[in-house]
Image 1: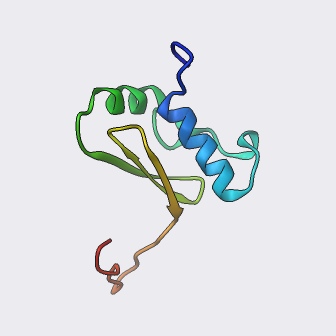
Image 2: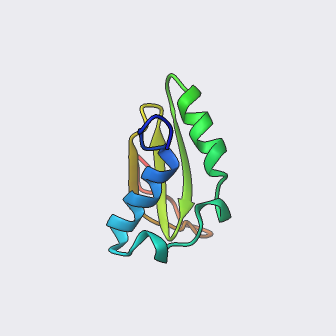
Length: 86
């Protein structure tokens, strides 16, 4: 945390813990999936856009405003087509 503000990477872990009804300490380390410092720097430097990645069985989308959306992990296999709007 810098200046008392929650870092985006910390927000991701908290949001996934809430979504999956698990304690934050029960989740795999975020750095196994994405570099938390790089994620924080990227989002802090963005003026528009979003970053998406998978973590702890969830699809994560982080907006340039620091918002975190956690969705169920979707897998698209051969012959599968994502629903429109995805």
